[in-house]
Image 1 (spheres, rainbow, N blue to C red):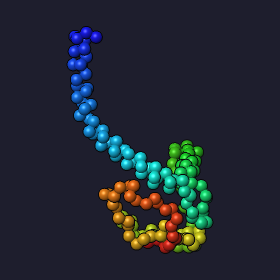
Image 2: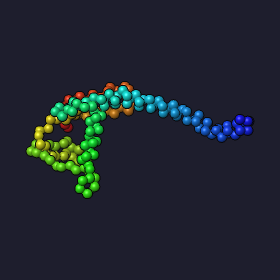
Image 3: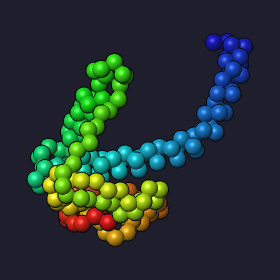
Image 4: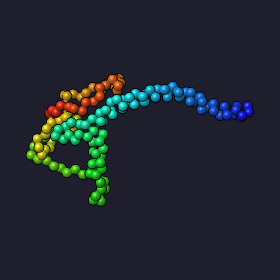
Length: 155
């Protein structure tokens, strides 16, 4: 390249080089946060997704990620359009002679229904209050979620 060509090229690239240099600090912050996200996914979420939920008498023994895929397939089958009215999820009201009710919900109050059998309980057991939200704690400092939980009466 002669001097005129090189000078023209450097003039053309000056804006791109300046913008790239300015963005390098932002990119460093972004990659650090992505590294934290990656660490959380690899060390916390993936180990939980490989566990099986033990919920007798309904335990399947398959990992959580596989149960999620099975639920999606079941939902797709339940929502298919088979009668010309379009796609919708159809639920049939069922019930038995065992009355059940919820605690007071913020917008609806108590809800009532009838169960076919006596409820076994809720899992995990209601701790009596919502767990605290701790936004200042890094994911790497939290324990891996334990999918085994005590059964208890709901709120």
